[in-house]
Length: 384
Ligand SMILES: NC(=O)C1=CN([C@@H]2O[C@H](COP(=O)(O)OP(=O)(O)OC[C@H]3O[C@@H](n4cnc5c(N)ncnc54)[C@H](OP(=O)(O)O)[C@@H]3O)[C@@H](O)[C@H]2O)C=CC1
Ligand SMILES: CC(=O)[C@@H](O)[C@H](O)COP(=O)(O)O
Ligand SMILES: [Mn+2]
Image 1 (tube, protein in one colour):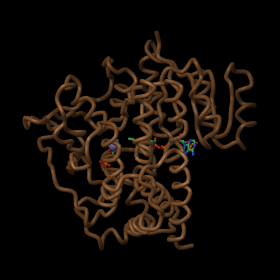
Image 2 (tube, rainbow, N blue to C red; image 1 turned 45 degrees about the vertical axis):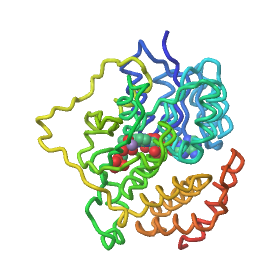
Image 3 (cartoon, rainbow, N blue to C red; image 1 turned 180 degrees about the vertical axis):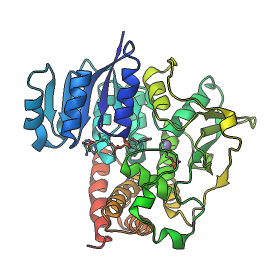
């Protein structure tokens, strides 16, 4: 039986690579649903190529354009964020791959879990904002959350066969981004072009800026905390500039398992789709002799303040990671639109965390309200 996949955010970096993986395993997977926000032409092309049951465009203004372009295809066309949250519940969907960016990924992920769909989770913001709620819901609905994020896929792979053995520590690897080794004075003047130039990965703009500021690693620590049910103190960030070891797990006896490979997201995407099976991979392979040196460093949280802020938010708990996430989304957007400097992003986030009301045990409505309020407050710290 082929697995029928709904891809949320099919026109993005992860979405397109997921389609590559599916195209290389036509006997295992079918595309059931594709969604995008604005990229109408790309979505139409993908629909014609992959013949899904349904497509959804987030921006409702593009509905008629897509409907007209697909009028001769047996493909349902919907529009709007509500439709994205509904389409994941279709009876024919087996698995939902969440590759939308940001807080917008939360609602459709909840709806998919409620409908009993397994999740291949790329959208880390979902767990950052509401990890507690999502974890409990997934257990309640007996739904598997398979990590797509390369580090979490690595940790997940290290844990295979270790059901009885508690994790002592997670060693979360970070490339260090384009500004590794630089000081605060340097960061104050970096440009958008420099920040978008990741040394090892080609990704969407938002996560690329997060990688440059090390916020990505902070978000990933929170993601790991919920995926693997560990305490914040059990997560250590290790800078590994080559991005070959994708993360490690240290066990009680001191043994450390690592998962390795070239930096290529098609591997973790494929593993999440095919788990527990490993399918053949036609992707370029790592050879030790090409990398005579794999190196490791400590992260500098005094220079990369976002990493410290994320750990602070994780330690505080409640709605603080939701506040962190919203403020970060606003700050990254401002940086990309040249309304805030690179270093100023940390000020925006810290100030927002200090100002939004703390909720110790939030539910879904609290997260929605917190996100709205944190965005409003974060905007007040941005120059016009
Ligand atoms: N790229 C990578 O290698 C990795 C990414 N991730 C995570 O995966 C997620 C996706 O990242 P990435 O693929 O890089 O991002 P991209 O920006 O490349 O793609 C985002 C996708 O989501 C859609 N989208 C954006 N906003 C909305 C919205 N409000 N409503 C509906 N759809 C929306 C976009 O549509 P449109 O094209 O129309 O704008 C696009 O299809 C992020 O959470 C990221 O942190 C995790 C690990 C690695
Ligand atoms: C590919 C992937 O999973 C990204 O999240 C990647 O980890 C970014 O690299 P750094 O954040 O380590 O620079
Ligand atoms: Mn990652």
